[in-house]
Length: 310
Image (cartoon, rainbow, N blue to C red; front, side, top):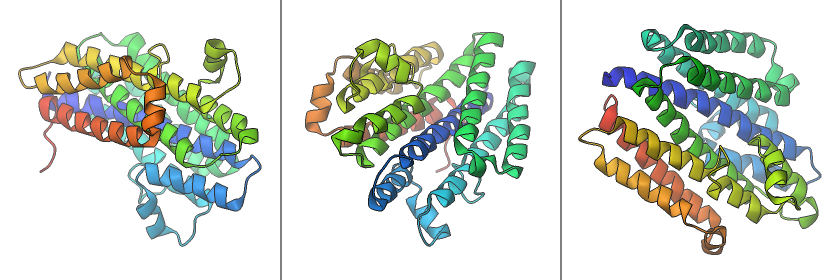
């Protein structure tokens, strides 16, 4: 497969997944903002989300003060934010358009219709009137894109590069969503259940948690499920397993070190205990994990795709 074609497929998937995960992260904050808390706690939660998304400076350059409505608008549609949901869905559509010949008609039509429907929803300002409904729509369109891809495309290199983009982005964002919660407040035991329940629902994990543990929701078990459970689709371990498997399918003469680093991170998660991470500091581990995922993304680009600009 031509590296430019692989590059477009990879970034189509990354942008689609990034839009979904931005919606999930915003959904956590919108839901937890409805719970009783001080103004300082609420501000800390929104700032933590901007900080872990590396968007605090960009937001501050546009707004004199932090307001939830402004944060939502900035992360949904602000043209100055290249990581906004609108920018990501546009990026996904443009990358899909560039390689229409490598996609089935159904995959292209989903990407194109998502972009067209988004314009209507932004004109209606649905993200202001009913943000939870808007975030659910973003998640649904991402689910539809993945389902149509798996259900209609030949399972060849094109799909492997799409899956690489999906799981690199998902691993990054699962780590960020966890880190937002650990940094963002909710320290009182009496209200912790509601904070962690909101986080679980944001990653479609509430029912799964109940099925696994059948007990009260605790931060330790939430972290374990979203980091170390291979059978949890959005966990860090599940993402790393998918990355290792898809890298194996597209390996070339230059990718040996990339495979080794991915395998090392996979093994670390596979044989770890959550107690070890909590004892050493979960925030510190997640920060290191994000750096390593960033490095893996750079290596995938260097080994397989259009080289990154110097």
